[in-house]
Length: 275
Image (cartoon, rainbow, N blue to C red; front, side, top):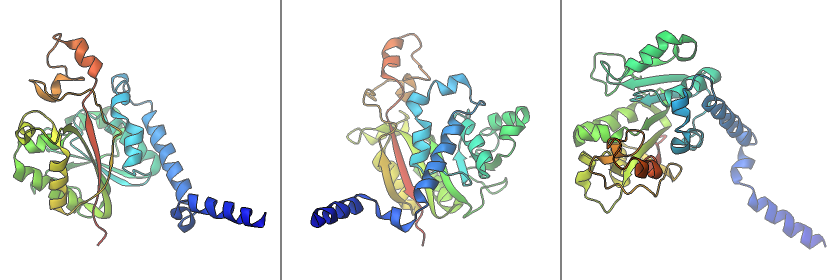
């Protein structure tokens, strides 16, 4: 009987992750972080049109995968209409963290500036920065960010050419602390497709993004299928914008594209080496 107890005890010990012994507070911290993300996703400042897209964009699972925590200094690149900003701003405020919105200075931050004027309680603490930085306007300080996030933007940089894309990743690498995280969500092109499609379709190959990131010094830490959509055939004349929410074909085959849903997306987590 004693031997059976020992065997059972050994099996139980092996089933517990080693990290649990190394840091008894790790599980609590992760749970607290997930709770904070869930609260930000449910925050009242979010617009109904944005929350309706949660089933495609999976914000809580995505931010948890990237390891975003209360108190982090987070950079959101090219926030555009502010879909993720609606979540990241209350998350930063509640956790005592810092949120940067970084985009082309003259046109990329207009929506965030409007929100800061209309709802300073939620958005007033967001710091604005130019990205890519051209040397004249405020920037994200080098070595200051815990996490940099970019959602469906790399294809826009790619439209500007490979050199522009490489420069973007180089600047991201500089703004992160050693050990910091870069989280990328992007429309995913099939690896077997012609790479020339990256220059006009809005889709990118995983291998292309990984190559740009690694050339800048990043290491790929993990991939996730959180934002995958196998229904996406990626063969549309008007590119990814054929699908919702854009629906560039208008009423033509509208129900077909609504049934497909939003694009198939890669979700990649990169790390800046600690040394």
